[in-house]
Length: 499
Image 1 (tube, rainbow, N blue to C red):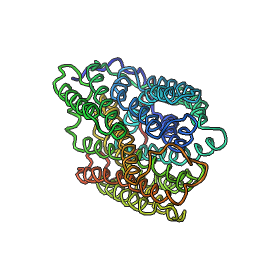
Image 2: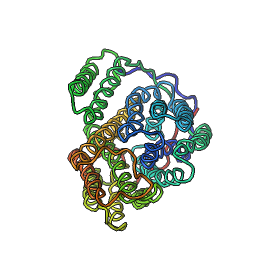
Image 3: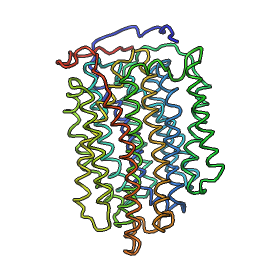
Protein backbone atom coordinates (compact mmCIF):
# COMPACT_ATOMS: atom_id res chain seq x y z
CA UNK A 1 0.00 0.00 0.00
CA UNK A 2 1.45 3.38 -0.98
CA UNK A 3 0.91 6.32 1.31
CA UNK A 4 1.05 9.94 0.39
CA UNK A 5 4.32 11.59 1.26
CA UNK A 6 4.45 13.85 4.23
CA UNK A 7 5.51 17.47 3.92
CA UNK A 8 8.78 17.50 2.01
CA UNK A 9 11.84 19.43 2.92
CA UNK A 10 11.08 23.07 2.11
CA UNK A 11 14.14 23.78 0.04
CA UNK A 12 16.17 21.97 -2.54
CA UNK A 13 19.54 23.17 -3.66
CA UNK A 14 22.31 21.73 -5.69
CA UNK A 15 24.67 20.04 -3.32
CA UNK A 16 27.65 17.77 -3.80
CA UNK A 17 26.53 14.39 -2.36
CA UNK A 18 30.03 13.02 -1.82
CA UNK A 19 30.79 14.60 1.61
CA UNK A 20 27.55 13.09 2.94
CA UNK A 21 28.55 9.70 1.57
CA UNK A 22 31.98 9.90 3.21
CA UNK A 23 30.33 10.67 6.56
CA UNK A 24 27.91 7.76 6.20
CA UNK A 25 30.68 5.37 5.26
CA UNK A 26 32.41 6.03 8.59
CA UNK A 27 29.47 4.51 10.47
CA UNK A 28 29.25 1.64 8.00
CA UNK A 29 33.00 1.17 8.42
CA UNK A 30 32.64 0.88 12.20
CA UNK A 31 29.98 -1.82 11.88
CA UNK A 32 32.10 -3.89 9.50
CA UNK A 33 35.26 -3.44 11.56
CA UNK A 34 33.35 -4.72 14.56
CA UNK A 35 32.30 -7.84 12.64
CA UNK A 36 35.76 -8.71 11.34
CA UNK A 37 37.59 -7.74 14.51
CA UNK A 38 35.79 -10.36 16.62
CA UNK A 39 36.98 -13.32 14.53
CA UNK A 40 40.62 -12.48 15.41
CA UNK A 41 39.80 -12.30 19.11
CA UNK A 42 37.94 -15.62 19.23
CA UNK A 43 40.72 -17.67 20.90
CA UNK A 44 41.46 -14.89 23.42
CA UNK A 45 37.78 -14.59 24.39
CA UNK A 46 37.54 -18.38 24.77
CA UNK A 47 40.54 -18.44 27.09
CA UNK A 48 39.73 -15.34 29.14
CA UNK A 49 36.04 -16.07 29.69
CA UNK A 50 36.58 -19.84 30.16
CA UNK A 51 34.16 -20.95 27.47
CA UNK A 52 34.23 -22.90 24.20
CA UNK A 53 34.05 -22.12 20.50
CA UNK A 54 30.33 -22.81 20.23
CA UNK A 55 29.52 -20.20 22.87
CA UNK A 56 31.91 -17.65 21.36
CA UNK A 57 30.34 -18.15 17.93
CA UNK A 58 27.15 -16.94 19.61
CA UNK A 59 28.97 -13.64 20.24
CA UNK A 60 28.89 -13.24 16.46
CA UNK A 61 25.56 -14.97 15.85
CA UNK A 62 23.70 -12.91 18.49
CA UNK A 63 25.03 -9.72 16.93
CA UNK A 64 24.10 -10.80 13.42
CA UNK A 65 20.67 -12.03 14.48
CA UNK A 66 19.89 -8.77 16.30
CA UNK A 67 21.14 -6.97 13.19
CA UNK A 68 19.13 -9.03 10.68
CA UNK A 69 15.68 -9.10 12.26
CA UNK A 70 15.01 -5.39 12.93
CA UNK A 71 16.73 -4.15 9.74
CA UNK A 72 13.48 -4.60 7.83
CA UNK A 73 11.55 -2.25 10.11
CA UNK A 74 14.43 0.19 10.61
CA UNK A 75 14.56 0.71 6.86
CA UNK A 76 10.88 1.69 7.00
CA UNK A 77 11.48 3.88 10.05
CA UNK A 78 14.08 5.74 8.02
CA UNK A 79 11.46 6.45 5.34
CA UNK A 80 9.02 7.65 7.99
CA UNK A 81 11.20 9.70 10.37
CA UNK A 82 14.12 10.48 8.09
CA UNK A 83 17.20 8.36 7.34
CA UNK A 84 19.51 10.89 8.98
CA UNK A 85 17.65 10.70 12.31
CA UNK A 86 17.66 6.90 12.30
CA UNK A 87 21.33 6.82 11.35
CA UNK A 88 22.30 9.09 14.25
CA UNK A 89 20.12 7.13 16.70
CA UNK A 90 21.66 3.85 15.57
CA UNK A 91 25.16 5.23 15.85
CA UNK A 92 24.44 6.27 19.45
CA UNK A 93 23.08 2.83 20.40
CA UNK A 94 25.97 1.04 18.68
CA UNK A 95 28.63 3.19 20.38
CA UNK A 96 27.17 2.77 23.88
CA UNK A 97 26.74 -0.98 23.36
CA UNK A 98 30.40 -1.20 22.29
CA UNK A 99 31.39 0.29 25.61
CA UNK A 100 29.17 -2.25 27.38
CA UNK A 101 30.80 -5.14 25.43
CA UNK A 102 34.25 -4.09 26.61
CA UNK A 103 33.20 -3.77 30.24
CA UNK A 104 31.52 -7.19 30.54
CA UNK A 105 33.29 -10.08 32.29
CA UNK A 106 31.13 -13.07 31.30
CA UNK A 107 30.27 -14.76 28.03
CA UNK A 108 26.56 -14.34 28.78
CA UNK A 109 26.96 -10.61 29.39
CA UNK A 110 28.98 -10.24 26.21
CA UNK A 111 26.30 -11.97 24.15
CA UNK A 112 23.57 -9.70 25.59
CA UNK A 113 25.64 -6.59 24.89
CA UNK A 114 26.24 -7.79 21.34
CA UNK A 115 22.48 -8.12 20.85
CA UNK A 116 22.07 -4.41 21.69
CA UNK A 117 25.03 -3.58 19.47
CA UNK A 118 23.42 -5.50 16.61
CA UNK A 119 20.21 -3.54 17.05
CA UNK A 120 22.19 -0.31 16.71
CA UNK A 121 23.82 -1.64 13.54
CA UNK A 122 20.39 -2.50 12.12
CA UNK A 123 19.41 1.15 12.43
CA UNK A 124 22.54 2.38 10.63
CA UNK A 125 23.04 0.19 7.55
CA UNK A 126 19.74 0.59 5.65
CA UNK A 127 19.99 4.36 6.05
CA UNK A 128 23.37 4.50 4.30
CA UNK A 129 22.05 2.58 1.32
CA UNK A 130 18.74 4.49 1.21
CA UNK A 131 20.52 7.86 1.27
CA UNK A 132 22.85 6.78 -1.55
CA UNK A 133 19.77 5.78 -3.55
CA UNK A 134 18.19 9.20 -3.00
CA UNK A 135 21.11 11.63 -3.42
CA UNK A 136 22.83 9.94 -6.38
CA UNK A 137 21.07 9.50 -9.75
CA UNK A 138 20.83 5.94 -11.06
CA UNK A 139 23.52 6.45 -13.68
CA UNK A 140 26.07 7.62 -11.08
CA UNK A 141 25.11 5.22 -8.33
CA UNK A 142 27.73 2.63 -9.27
CA UNK A 143 30.56 5.02 -8.33
CA UNK A 144 28.87 5.75 -5.00
CA UNK A 145 28.33 2.05 -4.32
CA UNK A 146 31.99 1.47 -5.19
CA UNK A 147 32.99 3.71 -2.28
CA UNK A 148 30.51 1.80 -0.12
CA UNK A 149 32.20 -1.44 -1.25
CA UNK A 150 35.68 0.02 -0.74
CA UNK A 151 34.64 0.82 2.82
CA UNK A 152 34.09 -2.90 3.31
CA UNK A 153 37.58 -3.53 1.94
CA UNK A 154 39.18 -1.01 4.30
CA UNK A 155 37.26 -2.51 7.22
CA UNK A 156 38.41 -5.99 6.21
CA UNK A 157 41.99 -4.73 6.33
CA UNK A 158 41.82 -2.51 9.40
CA UNK A 159 39.54 -4.70 11.50
CA UNK A 160 41.62 -7.87 11.84
CA UNK A 161 44.98 -6.06 12.00
CA UNK A 162 43.77 -3.53 14.55
CA UNK A 163 42.07 -6.37 16.40
CA UNK A 164 45.29 -8.36 16.48
CA UNK A 165 47.30 -5.41 17.77
CA UNK A 166 44.71 -4.62 20.44
CA UNK A 167 44.32 -8.25 21.57
CA UNK A 168 48.09 -8.74 21.75
CA UNK A 169 48.80 -5.43 23.47
CA UNK A 170 45.79 -4.49 25.59
CA UNK A 171 43.32 -7.39 25.64
CA UNK A 172 40.23 -8.39 23.68
CA UNK A 173 38.08 -5.78 25.46
CA UNK A 174 39.75 -3.05 23.42
CA UNK A 175 38.32 -4.36 20.15
CA UNK A 176 35.07 -2.88 21.46
CA UNK A 177 36.43 0.18 23.28
CA UNK A 178 37.97 1.40 20.01
CA UNK A 179 34.46 1.96 18.63
CA UNK A 180 33.73 4.72 21.15
CA UNK A 181 35.94 7.50 19.69
CA UNK A 182 35.11 6.41 16.13
CA UNK A 183 31.40 6.57 16.96
CA UNK A 184 31.71 10.08 18.40
CA UNK A 185 33.56 11.36 15.33
CA UNK A 186 31.08 9.64 13.01
CA UNK A 187 28.15 11.25 14.85
CA UNK A 188 29.63 14.75 14.53
CA UNK A 189 30.35 14.33 10.80
CA UNK A 190 26.93 12.89 10.00
CA UNK A 191 25.18 15.64 11.96
CA UNK A 192 27.00 18.25 9.88
CA UNK A 193 27.24 16.71 6.41
CA UNK A 194 24.29 14.36 5.84
CA UNK A 195 21.21 16.12 4.40
CA UNK A 196 17.79 15.85 6.00
CA UNK A 197 15.61 14.23 3.34
CA UNK A 198 11.84 14.27 2.94
CA UNK A 199 9.86 11.62 4.78
CA UNK A 200 6.96 9.37 3.77
CA UNK A 201 4.12 8.13 5.94
CA UNK A 202 4.14 4.38 6.61
CA UNK A 203 2.25 1.95 8.79
CA UNK A 204 4.31 -0.69 10.59
CA UNK A 205 3.82 -4.42 10.38
CA UNK A 206 4.50 -5.44 13.96
CA UNK A 207 3.10 -8.95 13.43
CA UNK A 208 5.60 -9.36 10.59
CA UNK A 209 8.42 -8.23 12.86
CA UNK A 210 7.40 -10.78 15.51
CA UNK A 211 7.04 -13.65 13.05
CA UNK A 212 10.36 -12.97 11.30
CA UNK A 213 12.20 -12.59 14.62
CA UNK A 214 10.82 -15.77 16.21
CA UNK A 215 11.30 -17.79 13.04
CA UNK A 216 14.90 -16.73 12.50
CA UNK A 217 15.85 -17.26 16.14
CA UNK A 218 14.44 -20.79 16.28
CA UNK A 219 16.05 -21.74 12.98
CA UNK A 220 19.52 -20.40 13.82
CA UNK A 221 19.45 -21.70 17.38
CA UNK A 222 18.56 -25.19 16.19
CA UNK A 223 21.26 -25.23 13.50
CA UNK A 224 23.99 -23.94 15.77
CA UNK A 225 23.23 -26.11 18.80
CA UNK A 226 22.40 -29.28 16.85
CA UNK A 227 25.83 -30.90 16.90
CA UNK A 228 26.43 -30.12 20.58
CA UNK A 229 23.13 -31.81 21.51
CA UNK A 230 23.55 -34.71 19.05
CA UNK A 231 20.65 -33.55 16.87
CA UNK A 232 18.07 -34.69 19.39
CA UNK A 233 14.32 -34.22 19.08
CA UNK A 234 14.10 -30.69 20.47
CA UNK A 235 16.81 -29.48 18.07
CA UNK A 236 14.84 -30.71 15.06
CA UNK A 237 11.67 -29.31 16.62
CA UNK A 238 13.33 -25.90 16.90
CA UNK A 239 14.39 -25.98 13.24
CA UNK A 240 11.00 -27.24 12.07
CA UNK A 241 9.01 -24.66 14.03
CA UNK A 242 11.37 -21.93 12.84
CA UNK A 243 10.76 -22.87 9.20
CA UNK A 244 7.01 -23.02 9.84
CA UNK A 245 6.96 -19.56 11.42
CA UNK A 246 9.00 -18.14 8.54
CA UNK A 247 6.50 -19.66 6.10
CA UNK A 248 3.68 -17.97 8.02
CA UNK A 249 5.64 -14.72 7.83
CA UNK A 250 5.81 -14.91 4.02
CA UNK A 251 2.08 -15.75 3.79
CA UNK A 252 1.25 -12.80 6.04
CA UNK A 253 3.36 -10.50 3.88
CA UNK A 254 1.38 -11.55 0.81
CA UNK A 255 -2.00 -10.95 2.50
CA UNK A 256 -1.37 -7.97 4.77
CA UNK A 257 -4.21 -5.57 3.84
CA UNK A 258 -2.25 -2.49 4.91
CA UNK A 259 1.51 -2.16 4.39
CA UNK A 260 3.64 -5.32 4.76
CA UNK A 261 7.08 -5.32 6.34
CA UNK A 262 8.44 -6.79 3.10
CA UNK A 263 6.63 -5.29 0.07
CA UNK A 264 6.58 -8.38 -2.14
CA UNK A 265 5.92 -6.36 -5.34
CA UNK A 266 9.52 -5.13 -5.11
CA UNK A 267 10.55 -8.67 -6.02
CA UNK A 268 8.80 -8.29 -9.35
CA UNK A 269 11.97 -6.53 -10.43
CA UNK A 270 14.20 -9.41 -11.49
CA UNK A 271 17.48 -7.67 -10.66
CA UNK A 272 16.31 -6.78 -7.16
CA UNK A 273 15.32 -10.40 -6.47
CA UNK A 274 18.51 -11.89 -7.85
CA UNK A 275 20.68 -9.33 -6.05
CA UNK A 276 19.14 -10.43 -2.76
CA UNK A 277 19.95 -14.08 -3.46
CA UNK A 278 23.51 -13.14 -4.38
CA UNK A 279 24.14 -10.94 -1.35
CA UNK A 280 22.71 -13.59 0.98
CA UNK A 281 25.25 -16.07 -0.38
CA UNK A 282 28.01 -13.49 0.08
CA UNK A 283 26.96 -12.74 3.66
CA UNK A 284 27.02 -16.47 4.44
CA UNK A 285 30.42 -17.08 2.85
CA UNK A 286 32.36 -14.09 4.14
CA UNK A 287 31.15 -14.61 7.71
CA UNK A 288 31.76 -18.34 7.60
CA UNK A 289 35.25 -18.28 6.08
CA UNK A 290 36.76 -15.89 8.64
CA UNK A 291 36.31 -18.14 11.67
CA UNK A 292 38.16 -21.33 10.58
CA UNK A 293 41.02 -19.43 8.92
CA UNK A 294 41.70 -17.37 12.07
CA UNK A 295 41.49 -20.41 14.35
CA UNK A 296 43.74 -22.41 11.99
CA UNK A 297 46.35 -19.64 11.90
CA UNK A 298 46.49 -19.23 15.67
CA UNK A 299 46.02 -22.83 16.82
CA UNK A 300 47.72 -24.86 14.09
CA UNK A 301 50.46 -22.43 13.12
CA UNK A 302 50.87 -20.75 16.51
CA UNK A 303 50.70 -17.24 15.05
CA UNK A 304 49.62 -14.30 17.17
CA UNK A 305 46.30 -12.54 16.46
CA UNK A 306 48.22 -9.76 14.71
CA UNK A 307 50.20 -12.16 12.53
CA UNK A 308 47.02 -14.08 11.70
CA UNK A 309 45.19 -10.90 10.71
CA UNK A 310 47.99 -9.94 8.32
CA UNK A 311 46.94 -12.88 6.15
CA UNK A 312 43.90 -10.81 5.15
CA UNK A 313 45.93 -7.80 3.94
CA UNK A 314 46.16 -8.88 0.25
CA UNK A 315 42.40 -9.49 0.12
CA UNK A 316 41.60 -6.06 1.58
CA UNK A 317 44.16 -4.19 -0.52
CA UNK A 318 42.87 -5.65 -3.78
CA UNK A 319 39.29 -4.73 -2.82
CA UNK A 320 40.37 -1.15 -2.09
CA UNK A 321 42.61 -0.71 -5.14
CA UNK A 322 39.97 -2.00 -7.56
CA UNK A 323 37.01 -0.14 -6.04
CA UNK A 324 37.21 2.98 -8.24
CA UNK A 325 37.84 0.99 -11.41
CA UNK A 326 34.95 -1.38 -10.72
CA UNK A 327 32.73 1.57 -9.80
CA UNK A 328 33.21 3.09 -13.26
CA UNK A 329 32.47 -0.25 -14.90
CA UNK A 330 29.36 -0.69 -12.76
CA UNK A 331 27.71 2.33 -14.41
CA UNK A 332 28.38 1.14 -17.97
CA UNK A 333 28.95 -2.65 -18.12
CA UNK A 334 26.27 -5.34 -17.80
CA UNK A 335 26.17 -6.43 -14.12
CA UNK A 336 26.03 -10.09 -15.18
CA UNK A 337 29.58 -9.88 -16.52
CA UNK A 338 31.03 -8.15 -13.48
CA UNK A 339 29.36 -10.18 -10.74
CA UNK A 340 29.77 -13.58 -12.41
CA UNK A 341 33.50 -12.90 -12.71
CA UNK A 342 33.58 -11.85 -9.05
CA UNK A 343 31.76 -14.94 -7.78
CA UNK A 344 33.93 -17.24 -9.87
CA UNK A 345 37.09 -15.64 -8.49
CA UNK A 346 35.88 -15.93 -4.88
CA UNK A 347 34.87 -19.58 -5.27
CA UNK A 348 38.24 -20.43 -6.82
CA UNK A 349 40.12 -18.54 -4.10
CA UNK A 350 38.37 -20.34 -1.23
CA UNK A 351 38.91 -23.77 -2.79
CA UNK A 352 42.56 -22.84 -3.29
CA UNK A 353 42.81 -21.63 0.30
CA UNK A 354 41.34 -24.86 1.68
CA UNK A 355 43.92 -26.84 -0.32
CA UNK A 356 46.89 -24.97 1.17
CA UNK A 357 45.72 -24.85 4.80
CA UNK A 358 48.29 -27.37 6.09
CA UNK A 359 50.64 -27.28 9.09
CA UNK A 360 53.66 -26.80 6.83
CA UNK A 361 52.42 -24.47 4.09
CA UNK A 362 54.51 -21.37 3.38
CA UNK A 363 53.00 -17.96 4.08
CA UNK A 364 53.06 -17.00 0.40
CA UNK A 365 50.91 -20.03 -0.37
CA UNK A 366 48.19 -18.55 1.84
CA UNK A 367 48.60 -14.99 0.54
CA UNK A 368 48.12 -15.82 -3.15
CA UNK A 369 44.52 -17.07 -2.83
CA UNK A 370 43.84 -14.05 -0.59
CA UNK A 371 44.79 -11.79 -3.53
CA UNK A 372 42.28 -13.59 -5.74
CA UNK A 373 39.66 -13.34 -2.99
CA UNK A 374 40.13 -9.56 -2.89
CA UNK A 375 39.71 -9.29 -6.64
CA UNK A 376 36.49 -11.28 -6.48
CA UNK A 377 35.15 -9.16 -3.62
CA UNK A 378 35.68 -5.95 -5.61
CA UNK A 379 33.65 -7.32 -8.52
CA UNK A 380 30.70 -8.41 -6.36
CA UNK A 381 29.93 -5.84 -3.66
CA UNK A 382 29.51 -2.61 -5.64
CA UNK A 383 27.97 -4.05 -8.84
CA UNK A 384 25.51 -6.21 -6.92
CA UNK A 385 24.45 -3.40 -4.56
CA UNK A 386 24.01 -0.91 -7.38
CA UNK A 387 22.02 -3.42 -9.42
CA UNK A 388 19.70 -4.08 -6.48
CA UNK A 389 18.76 -0.43 -6.00
CA UNK A 390 18.77 1.16 -9.48
CA UNK A 391 15.11 0.46 -10.31
CA UNK A 392 13.59 1.12 -6.87
CA UNK A 393 11.08 3.99 -6.57
CA UNK A 394 12.40 6.69 -4.26
CA UNK A 395 9.56 6.28 -1.74
CA UNK A 396 10.53 2.62 -1.35
CA UNK A 397 14.27 3.30 -0.92
CA UNK A 398 14.23 2.49 2.78
CA UNK A 399 12.17 -0.65 2.38
CA UNK A 400 14.36 -1.91 -0.44
CA UNK A 401 17.56 -1.14 1.45
CA UNK A 402 16.15 -2.84 4.52
CA UNK A 403 15.28 -6.00 2.60
CA UNK A 404 18.67 -6.09 0.88
CA UNK A 405 20.60 -5.69 4.12
CA UNK A 406 18.32 -8.13 5.92
CA UNK A 407 18.99 -10.86 3.37
CA UNK A 408 22.73 -10.18 3.65
CA UNK A 409 22.52 -10.50 7.41
CA UNK A 410 20.32 -13.58 7.27
CA UNK A 411 23.01 -15.18 5.15
CA UNK A 412 25.64 -14.09 7.66
CA UNK A 413 23.64 -15.52 10.59
CA UNK A 414 23.24 -18.85 8.86
CA UNK A 415 26.92 -18.82 7.86
CA UNK A 416 28.03 -18.23 11.44
CA UNK A 417 25.77 -20.99 12.74
CA UNK A 418 26.56 -23.49 10.00
CA UNK A 419 30.33 -23.07 10.18
CA UNK A 420 30.27 -23.74 13.93
CA UNK A 421 28.38 -26.98 13.33
CA UNK A 422 30.72 -28.02 10.53
CA UNK A 423 33.91 -27.23 12.48
CA UNK A 424 32.68 -29.24 15.44
CA UNK A 425 31.62 -32.17 13.27
CA UNK A 426 34.91 -32.23 11.34
CA UNK A 427 36.92 -32.11 14.57
CA UNK A 428 34.85 -35.01 15.87
CA UNK A 429 35.43 -36.92 12.62
CA UNK A 430 39.19 -36.42 13.09
CA UNK A 431 38.94 -37.80 16.64
CA UNK A 432 39.50 -34.39 18.27
CA UNK A 433 37.45 -32.60 20.93
CA UNK A 434 35.62 -29.36 20.23
CA UNK A 435 38.05 -26.44 20.20
CA UNK A 436 38.20 -24.80 23.64
CA UNK A 437 41.12 -22.43 23.35
CA UNK A 438 44.05 -24.57 24.36
CA UNK A 439 47.02 -23.43 22.38
CA UNK A 440 45.24 -20.42 20.97
CA UNK A 441 47.82 -17.69 20.67
CA UNK A 442 50.36 -19.47 22.88
CA UNK A 443 52.06 -21.69 20.33
CA UNK A 444 51.26 -24.25 17.68
CA UNK A 445 49.64 -27.58 18.42
CA UNK A 446 51.89 -30.63 18.79
CA UNK A 447 52.61 -32.31 15.43
CA UNK A 448 50.65 -35.39 16.51
CA UNK A 449 47.36 -33.47 16.40
CA UNK A 450 48.19 -30.44 14.21
CA UNK A 451 47.58 -32.33 10.98
CA UNK A 452 44.16 -33.57 12.03
CA UNK A 453 43.11 -30.17 13.37
CA UNK A 454 44.32 -28.52 10.18
CA UNK A 455 42.38 -31.01 8.05
CA UNK A 456 39.21 -30.27 10.02
CA UNK A 457 39.52 -26.51 9.49
CA UNK A 458 40.34 -26.95 5.78
CA UNK A 459 37.30 -29.17 5.32
CA UNK A 460 35.11 -26.56 7.02
CA UNK A 461 36.43 -24.01 4.52
CA UNK A 462 34.71 -25.93 1.69
CA UNK A 463 31.26 -24.84 2.87
CA UNK A 464 31.49 -21.14 1.84
CA UNK A 465 32.37 -21.82 -1.85
CA UNK A 466 29.58 -24.40 -2.04
CA UNK A 467 27.05 -21.75 -0.98
CA UNK A 468 28.59 -19.16 -3.31
CA UNK A 469 27.63 -21.34 -6.28
CA UNK A 470 24.02 -20.29 -5.56
CA UNK A 471 25.06 -16.66 -5.82
CA UNK A 472 26.88 -17.30 -9.09
CA UNK A 473 23.84 -18.96 -10.62
CA UNK A 474 21.63 -16.04 -9.52
CA UNK A 475 23.75 -13.28 -11.09
CA UNK A 476 23.92 -15.13 -14.41
CA UNK A 477 20.25 -14.17 -14.84
CA UNK A 478 20.63 -10.41 -14.32
CA UNK A 479 18.82 -8.43 -17.00
CA UNK A 480 20.19 -5.40 -18.83
CA UNK A 481 20.00 -2.22 -16.67
CA UNK A 482 17.21 0.18 -17.65
CA UNK A 483 18.48 3.41 -16.06
CA UNK A 484 19.15 6.53 -18.12
CA UNK A 485 22.78 6.85 -19.08
CA UNK A 486 23.54 3.11 -19.09
CA UNK A 487 26.46 2.46 -21.39
CA UNK A 488 27.21 6.16 -21.72
CA UNK A 489 28.95 8.86 -19.73
CA UNK A 490 27.37 9.54 -16.37
CA UNK A 491 25.38 12.76 -16.05
CA UNK A 492 26.68 15.61 -14.01
CA UNK A 493 26.14 16.31 -10.33
CA UNK A 494 23.17 15.12 -8.38
CA UNK A 495 20.76 17.31 -6.54
CA UNK A 496 20.33 16.41 -2.88
CA UNK A 497 17.28 17.42 -0.91
CA UNK A 498 18.12 19.39 2.18
CA UNK A 499 16.17 20.95 4.93
